[in-house]
Amino acid sequence: KPKVFIAKPIPQEVEEFIAKHCDYKIWREVEPIPEDILLKEIADVEGLMTPKGIITEDLLSHAPHLKVVSNIAVGYDGFDIEAMKKRNVIGTHTPYVLDEAVADLVFGLILSTSRRIVEFDRYVKDGEWNFNLDSQEYFGKDVHHAKLGIIGLGRIGEKIVRRAKLGFEMDVLYYNRSRKRDLEEKYDVQYRNMNDLLKESDFVVLMLPLTEATYHTMGKEQFASMKRDAIFINCSRGQVVDEAALIEALENNEIRAAGLDVFEIEPVQKDNPLLKMKNVVTLPHIGSCTENTRFDMAMKAAENLVAAVTGQVPPNVVKELQ
Ligand code: 8YV
Figure (cartoon, helix red, strand yellow):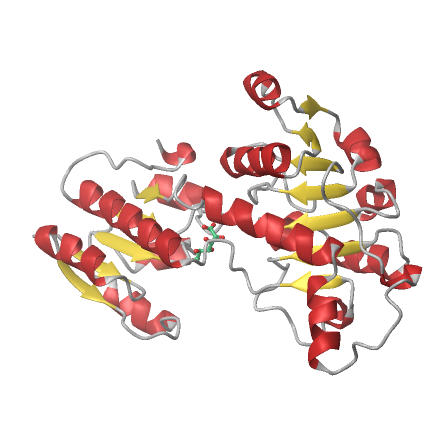
């Protein structure tokens, strides 16, 4: 049987599936695997299944027999594509199975920022209910019938659009590299260039993969284009945003609030000013973090791994390596 290494604990059923086809070792600790142990474990394997997918030239040089890296995530910005190409290493990821969970969380952030759920939860628990809720300063912002602008209309973006249109009866604008006329028709969403989208939207949702082209898509100028009352949501990758510019926009009241599941540096630094802002809701990158979704991601990653080491074409090879 081909040898593989699994760099994080996975559900038993997924492990049993891998066991049928592979000779495997697994990192069972909850703590992430230390780099030096990982490099030793991959010395003689043909397959690596990993949650982080940080695949560098150096890592590959420690794994001369490697045929596949199966990323237990949809984002593969950690792959050094050129290095993988050079060594004929296939890279796979887990599209589709996490789309709904991430779209749900986007609405969690939309609601918790606009209706100030986290802020008020703290007041109530601190016994500070006795303030005047008729005072303008405590009012929230409506989600229903508001205008949502989504930057990046891919698989997850489409799920967000469905929720926005069918659940909250929002007007939806989108910006994407390529027009999606089928979705425009299907959901009655309208295309805008970036600048118009930013100017018109009450909620700006970023849903882009991290690539060289998308790095710092949102910067000073973009935040300045947003309405002063608009809310910014990011559940994709921290580095798609110039975080310093976001902090400045919030400090200067150029935008109303932000909901963030991702940061430029993760785990977020303790002295990050965003952590002190009442109008910012912060989460520790939990977009896909539900029982069912994490199970489905692990199973999909296992299917990709097994396919590649048993001579089949895995179902989810990343497009740059197809
Ligand atoms: C986590 C994600 O990174 O799939 C992605 O790209 O961002 C998240 O799902 C992943 O689950 C880490 O294991």
